[in-house]
Length: 149
Image (cartoon, rainbow, N blue to C red; front, side):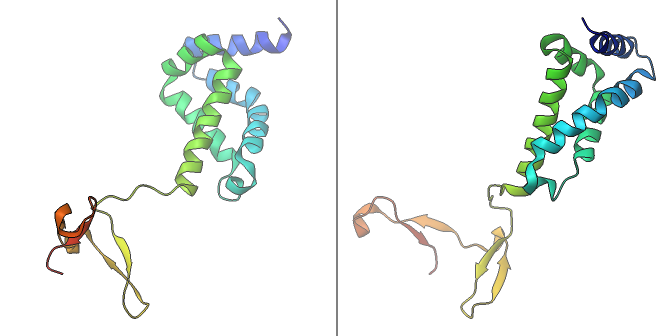
């Protein structure tokens, strides 16, 4: 094993022993390499909204909050693989947060175009009851009718 691997394993050992400075030194030693990885993995589009430093800070905060879970990942996958996977997962979460639209539910406000091209918001409580037509009434099996209209 090379000198770098020995130092990393020594830092992991210190983290296992709950050494207060172990995680700090671990972050200082591996931080620059992980920052480059986070910068690369963010991509241009997400990087315009999120700093790679924030991703790295979130990952190290997760390590501090759940040290035992991190050490289990290290035991299963190895130090670098565990860290890279944590960064990738955090970036995926940030991408979903910034770019993917959440599914609509009945309790969310829904924009509706009014007759005069103005947009107004209605809440689920303002939506009329929807009842199905009987298929024999119109000849289609999947038609819906707004009650009272």
